[in-house]
Length: 135
Image 1 (cartoon, one colour):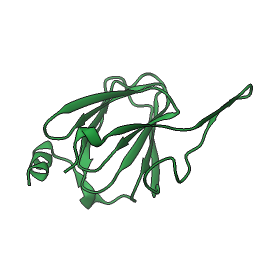
Image 2 (cartoon, rainbow, N blue to C red; image 1 turned 45 degrees about the vertical axis):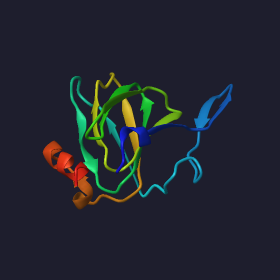
Image 3 (tube, helix red, strand yellow; image 1 turned 180 degrees about the vertical axis):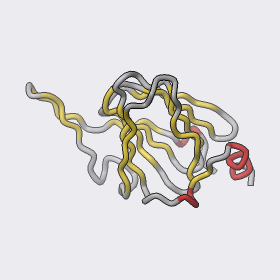
């Protein structure tokens, strides 16, 4: 069963020159092939996103602009990571509850997901998540 210890920050290669920075995510950058990409933006002050876990899917979250906090729960411990650099991604494995909060003005969260959308892969109630972790 996965725990918060399985979550990791992944440095995305950054190429710097006088024209600006370029970061690239290729096959060896993350441990899965991305099958879905989406992004969150214009999140109102005080709003929260996420509030779910995945049974199988893995995700990489990147703060392309601004910052936000990711609260991670594995059923036993709680960990908070602040994302605020576009060349640093947070790899969230399956079986981890996540909540995104404290979005700065202009924050953009890019998500690379290991699978296409499948409602059956979501655990949307924390009580159900606790049962899933204790099976």
